Image 1 (tube, rainbow, N blue to C red):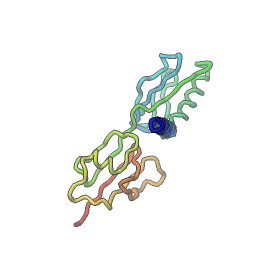
Image 2 (tube, rainbow, N blue to C red):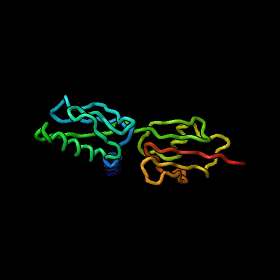
Image 3 (cartoon, rainbow, N blue to C red):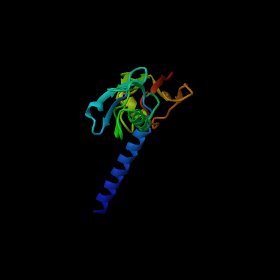
Image 4 (cartoon, rainbow, N blue to C red):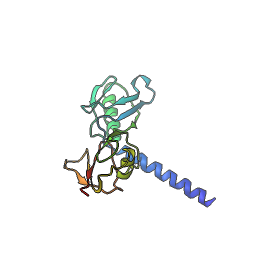
Length: 175
């Protein structure tokens, strides 16, 4: 019984942690969002993809730039806009339905873009890309983060967390 309770508590903590991470996640082009305005079905969007210019089209409000905002900041922004002449007490929620892709290239068997999933590491990303080629070097793996001011790739170990929009490069070994 105690073991079952421990498992349940751990599961709840992981769900809360993943939920809070999603709330702090910076939105960007390619993300698929769901916006629910409670009591206003005409304003709710079951699925809306962030465009390449970092915006979405929202009923009544038109084009809204969302790039770099977290889902919580976007909720507050939309509530503020809807309160300004449209609804008395807007209540809405935003969730990320699908995160933007991450990319793996270099010495992997199937380079390309892959859908992001939570708890992804560089090692798991390489497995998704078909594994390493014979010429690959585990010591020459770099990662380029999408939402950082320094746009230079940094060395990455296999256990480094991957984020949506990251570009992983696996270098070549000379031996």
